[in-house]
Image (cartoon, rainbow, N blue to C red):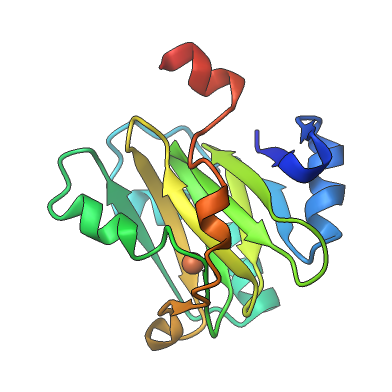
Amino acid sequence: MALVKIPAEERTLSDRSEVSAFLAGHGIDYERWTPTHELGAEAAADALLAAYAPKIDALKKRGGYVTADVIDVKPDTPNLDMMLAKFSREHWHDEDEVRFIIEGRGLFHIHPASGPAFANEVEAGDLIRVPRGTHHWFDLCVDKRIRAIRLFQDVSGWTPHYTDSGVDKGFEPVCFGPAYVARA
Ligand SMILES: [Fe+2]
């Protein structure tokens, strides 16, 4: 279940309908997905894509996404710090950033054109769609683990354009969810 934290307003949202409504107000789609059948923890990428195929296909039609893949990041992933550093500075993309979290968790910070930046922590079962052009940055939690399905409109379009605003420096890249706290 995703959480939202708005530091400027000293507010944290954990109620599902409140989180959805808040994100929708910023153009961000948020859904909870369940697989068509049970999957083992080590299910192969193809099996994962098949188990979520109805949801993926519906989203592809809605958003014009043409491909889907599975990204698997672990603490021992080669060049992990370099990879993460690419996305932990405020940036935007020419296409939507669509992620369905299968395992692990992550922390998006979203910086709307009007209004303060906020954190959106996502975990397994969360689908998030950040529209193209939205200023944002992303960090993993302390356990450095995430497995996620990604959808693309055009793979070549998914490169970060940095704002170099420095806004990201004012935010702690620290996850705050109860499940995370319990596991840490
Ligand atoms: Fe991004």
